[in-house]
Image (cartoon, rainbow, N blue to C red; front, side, top):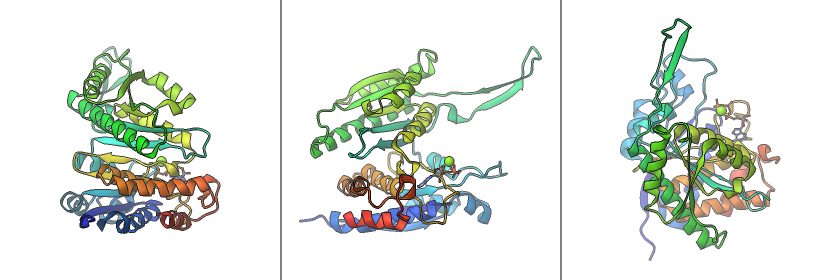
Length: 357
Ligand code: ATP
Ligand code: MG
């Protein structure tokens, strides 16, 4: 007896540029799924971004935030364009959304398909609320008159470090289960690598390191540690050795962009902004003004972000179906967008993936 469909509302924020071409793909995938997995989704389109700012004076209108808070249990975010020069009153709505919805983790899976000789399959779990991003900076004159001095606070808390490491532990356990169920790579131990630079920053990164170790002791995972500079080296030399990486905000930012470069195109890499009761899927790429409006943007990053969103809403069956369809398209390699060397339009890639659902 299948369970009755659960009505779940998702907010769709297309944003700017190619966000408007790829977010509809995510919606179509969600609409195609319910029949097979017993879910029912409802959608609401919401505005945010630079174009919204120019039109309304607010990059993140109140109605967008309120609707997300009161009516939605998840959201899909396309991209926001960044103005080339500082524009008075404009600040990124994505940063504001992360704060206002308490999305304290940024989760970024980086994976190659099976036909690729490199077997990369890792997830970077980046702390999203503190570290240098508290943006407490000040500039003053040096006492010896030698010029200006600028400082920024790097804040690390036990609470945020514990919570992000726990999420990394959960993700490692879940990935291991999925690997075992699929028979693929079940020999691989679930592993979390804590990255830091506590050899230099013994207090801030030291606290992150100690707390992450305490949190991860609660999970049946192998815990490893690596200093962030040597991690960058190994990430580029032997990316296939990593499973789950947990990092404070700044290192996580750098590592996840670097890791994205390993798999060929920004158009492939998804992310999710995760909190305790809300998840927002977001492709890693930006608004890509150079290719917008041509129906050639790769929709895979957004479709994978859609699957990732489902995963964090505990809709694992639906997520798995979508991942499988995406992988099948990539592995066959016939209907690919131009960034992957193909000739297919955005819509054709979406059609091919939906057909496989
Ligand atoms: P923004 O300021 O919004 O980040 P950007 O100019 O930095 O815009 P990105 O979106 O970050 O552009 O993209 C960087 C490059 O990668 C661009 O050349 C873009 O065309 C390409 N790119 C990004 N996303 C995709 C995609 N989904 N499909 C194909 N190419 C993409
Ligand atoms: Mg960019």
